Length: 308
Ligand SMILES: [Fe+2]
Ligand SMILES: [Fe+2]
Image 1 (tube, rainbow, N blue to C red):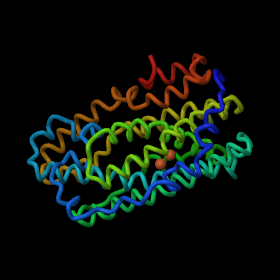
Image 2: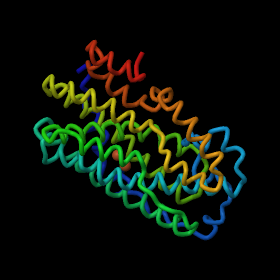
Image 3: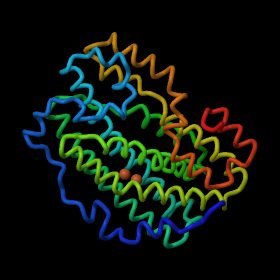
Image 4: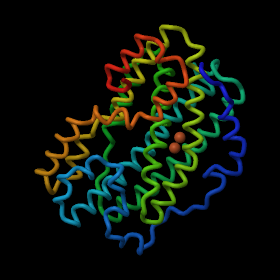
């Protein structure tokens, strides 16, 4: 391990006073004035969606564009609720009382429980936002392809490595999400959406530090065959986070399938190129360990287009 400052315990020291669940007022209810906002960008910023920023989306009419943005918001919220419960908190379960417990000390396991509480709250307010918007605008709900693929990664993992697999998924998602939410929270948005994003981001900065430190902690203790496994799973999980969700795109562009096809083809052709950018925080955490000093591991990350 290249550096071992105890950043996690420092950033979680005031959790009882500063975490969203303990300190932020409930501000996620939509008023009729909120629902009357007709500017698509106020519901979901273009910067976060390669589909909405694709040049073909420019030919959508304003009502079509509004619906596309609303669909993105509900989809992202439903995804967040499920991810927090079925992946991040399952990984924390492994760290607190499962197969990974032995790699972490008592203080780290207690900090992990603070994250567990945070993620439960994020799951709740994301669900509340999604329910209100979907019901007001009559939007269909669907499970994201990313979640289907993450579930598959877990299902296909050997039982003895199940918790390691879960840890890799949480590590990748917790380091990527800060980047996503940060881009989102700088935009001007409908008030409850803005509150939800800023409250979520408020916690996730801490979570990214915690999972980066835990990754370094775990990496320094596991055996070679576990390291071989982790490297392969992290690359696999990063790809899951990069790949577009074609079924969702067909739903978003249902009224304009001609545009939907162009957007889907464009995203399918380009997602690998975007990988170094979206993986930046994860790669930074990996670079704090000696993982990439190993020639074979480096060549695997290099072959996946992640490092050069
Ligand atoms: Fe979260
Ligand atoms: Fe988190």
